[in-house]
Amino acid sequence: MKFSKWLSNVVLVPKPGGKWRMCIDFKDLNKAYPKDFYPPPWIDQLIGRNVEVYVDDMLVKSKEVGNHVVDLEETFSVLRKYRLKLNPAKCTFEVWGGRFLGFMITQRGIKANPLKIKVILDMKVLTNVNEVQQLTGRITALSRFISKGAEKSLTLFKVLRKAKALEWDASC
Image (cartoon, rainbow, N blue to C red; front, side, top):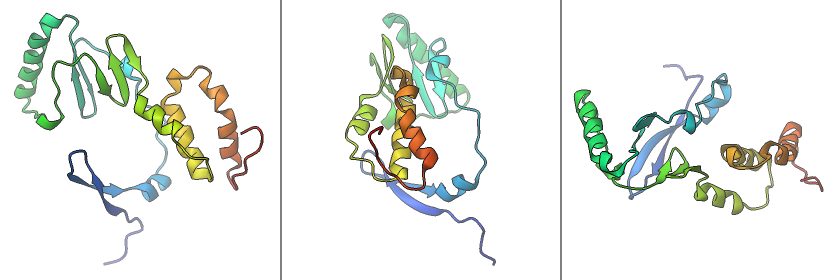
């Protein structure tokens, strides 16, 4: 058997609750794979009548508290019809808001997830290009909540454009 040109390592990732998930590290493959320029839709473009589904996440919502049980029954009926199953450990019922697709959903709308903000605030001084890339990715994920976010992060993107050696100056 010849050696494959592409090889991806298997890694174990801890899951909440103490269990482990086996994953494949596709970092090297992702570097070689052509970029997909079709971005996923913003969450507020997904808002529908009473069920939101995005990949493998689902949310049942109701305009009136009294309709929620009816909306759940309708949803469960459709799930049974197509023999779809839910993970009971991941199901939560009768909540007024919570985390969905990395955002906080409340009766008042969509808000930034405080945990994602905390990760940025807790970052140490950046010392290499990879850390700058991580920061710009995190900022981009929260950009809809940052006034003039692109303007404020322009210096970071300029640093990435130079990218050979990371040197901080007064503009950073």
